[in-house]
Image (cartoon, rainbow, N blue to C red; front, side, top):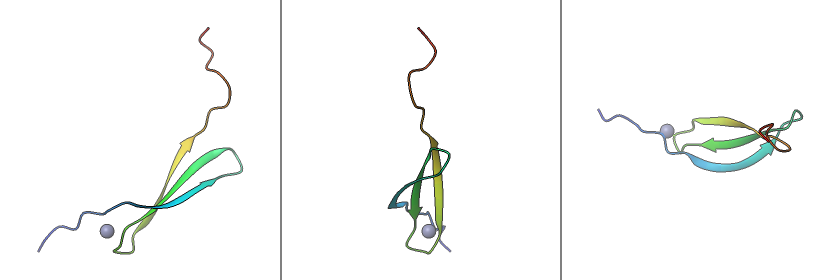
Length: 47
Ligand SMILES: [Zn+2]
């Protein structure tokens, strides 16, 4: 038996209401998942 390694095919992006970026991915085997990124607005407080 071989071990299936998921291949992340990009399904696009979405933005949630609280400003997070969601990367939608899926594999040809049917698995799908979302990866969320925090989108920081403005400059970091390190002046
Ligand atoms: Zn897979």
